[in-house]
Image (cartoon, rainbow, N blue to C red):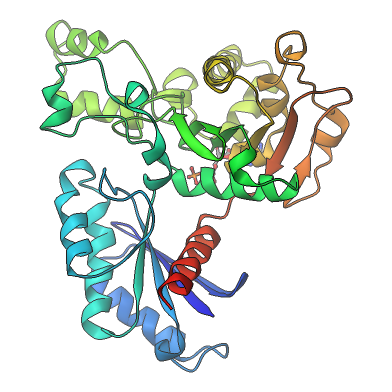
Length: 374
Ligand code: ADP
């Protein structure tokens, strides 16, 4: 089975072609001005590669769609209704859903017989219970305006949880995990019996952990103070919290590798930024241990989670007395990819580093849905 995965953003289109579980081709169109022209180029490119004769040779196209709201708790075969539903969710993801939808519409018009499947970033978190997703503000904001925690990075949290369960030789629905997706954007998820029961991002991806340029959780009154006392406009505060905060706000650099280099050279604000980054992650470790009761494994993924032994070791530091967790630092510093077990001796909780691959996860979910349809 051949599946093309498309991640259509506002200014770029990333694509990967899979034959069953194997990636056979990939590319990216950058600085996209017209999605129509960029997709035409992509179709032309696919016509000329050896692995396939033409787009007709492809069994399905899987799309990453950022926001599925409360309508989608699993991948959906795209038809008129699904298109309308994704459209109706644009207010919740004004930057992302329109770009996702544009590619879907262009392909529907040109290749109406190729099945297209939408895989949503929010879907995995639809199992979160109401006490964890409703905000303690006037309830009609949830009932009427759909303001609630949705969570993001769902495809990645699901993918690494699934891979970890397979690695541990267990069914996913028997596993309790804390999954850390740490990259420029970061989130943590509590997975209970294979299902997401809480996650750190919220109504938007601004919530939760401190990130490269996003603040994560702060006292909301800071926003009123910035506006009333310091004269900031609401658009400027939006930009400040999304693009100029987090690691960048504290030490001027958003890329963790650079921040760590500065820290190692003795830069005190870089050290403060790293310490804060770790502290926020550990706050969620505590909260999610309580949420889950028992934890089978902590799973690290994303650019930082997969590559920084320092961050992994600091997140897991001094957890033996509370939850019996120890990391094997030698294994942590000598990883074997794409999945590695860095659990220390006598640890009651496993610690795994699992490479995420959102495109592969979208391809697998697309194939599973197609097989169900047959
Ligand atoms: P995105 O969220 O944009 O997909 P990634 O998952 O690629 O981002 O993660 C990017 C982050 O990973 C950057 O902060 C980068 O510095 C960090 N990173 C990558 N390699 C390392 C490393 N070896 N050590 C520390 N941080 C790293």
